[in-house]
Structure formats: structure tokens, C-alpha cells
Length: 303
Image (cartoon, rainbow, N blue to C red; front, side, top):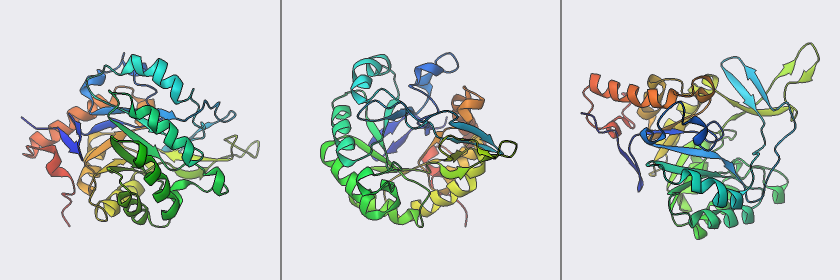
């Protein structure tokens, strides 16, 4: 028997497999394909204080070994989520986590206060890759000062597990991780999408309405693994790894690099049952290699 459970700084998961925000809807859309209770947890789509329509179409484009997206956080806002979505998904016997986004710090804090009152939401994933409208549009997560500020303010109103999702579009992601750790982050997740662009050579137009967008999928995996390893060696809080995980072997790479848990993202669009398969694959790997506790894989790279 293998113990697949992990404790992410007080956030207890039955296994290390989560689904990534923006790729799994509100979970209920995938109920026909897998039992959500068999996952370590799922992270619902990006939620903002007020409703957002998202960006104009086209806002997704396929690329070699990945995809670009610029959906623009389309959602009906945190109050709608609390009143209408939460009652439908709060009963699952797994960690239901809300990805929280904002354009200014007050957006984050007000929405976090609402989510703090939902008993069956044990954690939020704070998306600091959002443009800070009061600072000229620079993303909160691209400087230590702005990342620290938003985490500090959210930490003051949110009393449960605070996972902070880090942007890879920075010079030194380890420095950003240390800055959010210092302000009370319970864990960090990485990486968010890499900034990319694609052009239709026949029309000479960008393939996205926003010109640039977020690159995800297997193309980003080596970058993500490198960044997970760097952050794992820089902070004391747990790391949740994501970026192009398509199989159990990919997930185990992240664990060995230092991740305590992982998230499945783009792969959900290819195989909606993939997350459950990866749970089984991790267990099979542990049995094959005599690993009794999956947490023993975290940071176990042989250097």
C-alpha cells in the first residue's frame, strides 16, 4: 500500500493531484469523465470581485506542443460564485480551491473576504499575474514589492490556506517566491503561463484578439520544472508544480524537482479523465520503486 496523502502546510490532500484553474471549469463539467472525489482537489476557474466578459474572440490558438489563451478571466464574479456555484460544488469530499484574480488590491481583499466565509472552500490560489491598473498595468507578480503588497493585504483578511500562483515572466522567480513567503503565503504554485504570440501567415494577423497570450502545454514543461526546482531551494513553504503535465511520469518529474503537489492543466482539454489516470500512475510508480509515502518523492532528485 502507498500513502498518497500530502499535507501542504496544513492543507490536507488525499493525493498530490490537483487540476489547474481555467482548465477544469467548476469541476462539475467533468463529472461524467471521472470521480472528483478521487482527486487531491480541483481549482475552479479564475474568479474576480465583479463580473467580467473576457476578451474578444479569437482568444485561443493551438501551437506546437501547446496552446495560447487570452480568455480574459470571464466569470460572473465572486458574489455570484458564493450564491450559485458554491452550493453546487461545496459538497465534494476533496479540496475545492478558488483561483482569485483582481485589477487592484481592494478587488483581491473584498473577494477574499467573501471566500473566507465559505466553510467548504479550504484555500484560495491567489493569481498575481494580473495587471495592476493603479500601477500602469504591470502585473502584481512581476516585482517583489507589488507581490509582497497584495499578499500582505489578502493575508490580513483571509484566514485559511493562501496559495500564491507565481508568474514565470520575471527575471528571478525565486526572489518573488521569497517575497510572498515573507508576507504570509502558505504555499506557492508555479508556473502560470508564459507570454507568447502566434501569427497567421496567410492573413498576417495575430491569432489572438489580444495579440499576445498565455502559452501552456508540454512546450513549457522544462521551464516549469527548472523554476520549481529553483523555488523549492529558495523557500521553506510547499511548492505546487504545474506546466505541461501530460502523464504520471511528467508529474513525478515535478515532485522530484521539489513540488509537494501538482496541477493538471492543458491535458484536461485532450483527455478529460487524465487527472484520475495520473493519480493511478503515481501510485503505480511508487509501488514499482518501493516508495511507501508519496511525499518522500518531493525534492528527491539525485544530484
